[in-house]
Length: 508
Image (tube, rainbow, N blue to C red; front, side, top):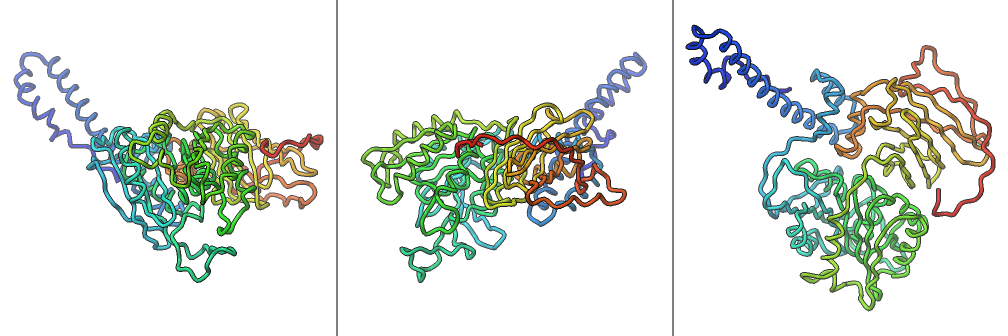
């Protein structure tokens, strides 16, 4: 709980003024009252500053404990017991956690995931680190057979020169991933790898670890990787695009033959999620390990999908590119000049998401929670305050977090949903979401631990089924409250949409 404000009887300001005030009492009571009022105001201001710092510290301690355990209900209850209004909690979350001064330079840490795997991790903090200042961060992922130390040795001169934080975790074997192909030896010992692109992996764990300890500028986080790490940069970046301002893969593409999962063509469609991010990728034109044809496929797909990017195919270079890895390499100088200009747009009015799992269902102010098919898409656009237009395929349920600038003053939310499926039609769903709630604040912060993606209002949207497979809707339970997240909104159907012209694969 917050510490109490300092007692006024022990205020340094009052102690200093007590003698002069006593002497002045006989000469001018007006002066006495004036000085006494100033003393009270100063002491109250100092006390408020202490209380505010303690409030922030307590709130983030509760959030950190909640993030490390299943369920957020107890976290919401504990924060509510602090006696703060939801608006006050929102302001504190957006202000960010209080950071302690820390030594700059290199350090090595060990990160532990929920399954007990341990990842040696290399960290760099600018020598003149100031906890009151926000810093850009690079999450660096190494290649096969290496560890985070390789990335630190390569990147440390560049992050030092440009004022970046750096975190470089080490890949570990995963028992839930069985690698296998005609060219893969099944008797080989478990191999450390990144080829499981999920929210519980070390790339995102390293990002969250840095956010807890250092003042990371969430709008300037870059995911970078080389070789196997380049594959991970593409795949993690495309699945969790709202965490980053840029992805920078070197000598890596999207799909390895020995890694089970979606095909190269399916994974290509995830690259739609990179719209609005910086994308810069480099490969040797004679890479003997990574198929250059796949890099060219990515270049072509990004162009057709309207994703701005920089593609650098180095003629005559192999898998190890001297222009990149040698000290003072010219391509790294270009890359960091480009990175310094990258910044995330966290306040997007339009969200577009393509996904293969609800595990990577986060897209700024949308959280996809259930899919009805293996590959799904969603596009959501604010058309006015309190009015959201959604088009989706394969999405069964999603939560929308309402940014303050798009919230209806009366607490209403209208969502128009077009499933665009065979026999489908647009439906309008009405919600009463009210004002700022602690539940929405905690849920939005917990999904990405990002002060720029904190929202105080939300609604759960159950996507209406197409008429081909829809079942009659069950009547609402007696006494159900439409404003409750568990209650179903009232749909108002519009006539079936006319047939639409077929669109290219790279369009929605």
